[in-house]
Length: 152
Image (cartoon, rainbow, N blue to C red; front, side, top):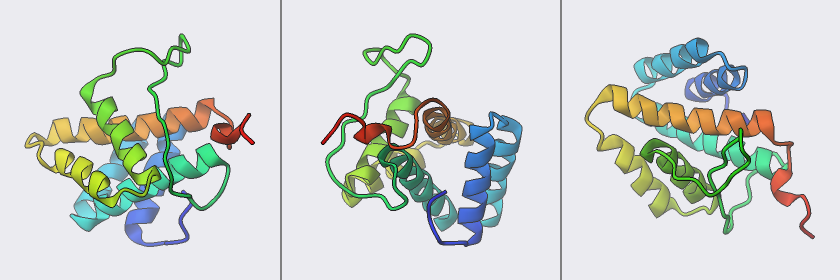
């Protein structure tokens, strides 16, 4: 996690992401469940922002996210393809990361609202898991600063 905020939601979000990067999904799930239980409401919003900012910092190779237009594409690690259809939960994760990376608060809040509108808690958890999975896979698979490689 890139934030200097050491609040409980940020610590739990960091624990969840660290576990996801280590491919320890039981520990990641436990951290997210604890986040939801101990930091209801604003805690998850804090975690969503921290996770998206961590993705942006990794992609840009810097600690602080810089807002601006970005282009995110789903990537099939096994094949290298960027031209495949993705499940709705993965599309949601991409849209959330993109809205945050662009600094578009209205779009970010709209994507968060899509999550809030899901009445089934299990399904909502699948969406949050897709976000963690996308970020963890990126951190494991691509070098820090990959978004700036080859650009001048």
